[in-house]
Picture 1 (cartoon, helix red, strand yellow):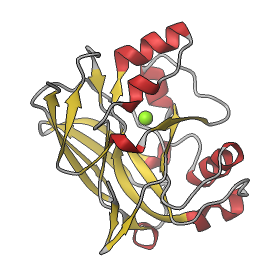
Picture 2 (cartoon, helix red, strand yellow; picture 1 turned 60 degrees about the horizontal axis):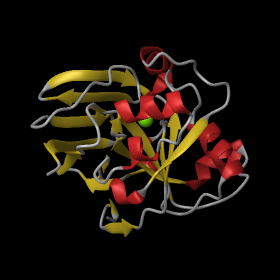
Picture 3 (spheres, helix red, strand yellow; picture 1 turned 180 degrees about the vertical axis):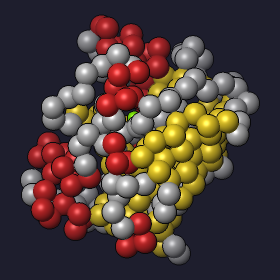
Length: 218
Ligand code: MG
């Protein structure tokens, strides 16, 4: 799918996610907060637009939502210094990092990659992109995720451990960043299991709203 920003479209290049970037979520998953950001990739084939359907794969018995601020890059770079990192940012979106938690736990226990846990088709709902200028400081935005109208995650980007410039700088030391890259900045506490028939609505202050239905993959 294409990312939409106003009347323009942008082809997503890759999805770079950061693990355990909110101390409270790291704690609820029984993990330490890493001293340096830890990244993993989600395939762009997992993206669906707001209003789409998350399909629960038969391979997993427990799928959870993670509502996150996504940074959309308008420019690429490698070894980007922290002071120049915000110059790459085109805008922001609301992103759901859908996770097959049982497959992730098994992979972690066995020292195996997270590709299946994070990478199923439909596991990356994303909102329209709001231009960076309209959002301003990305480190003081309320994040809220409701499941069937009930609040699940209520947090703020204020609680990010590693902030946006640091994440861009650190990621760009590992992999070349490109125009159209999506950087998902981690999730606050309160993630919960999602089930067939659930309706998810994620909102981030000044950024926007993403919604998705949940259905069983047949
Ligand atoms: Mg996540």
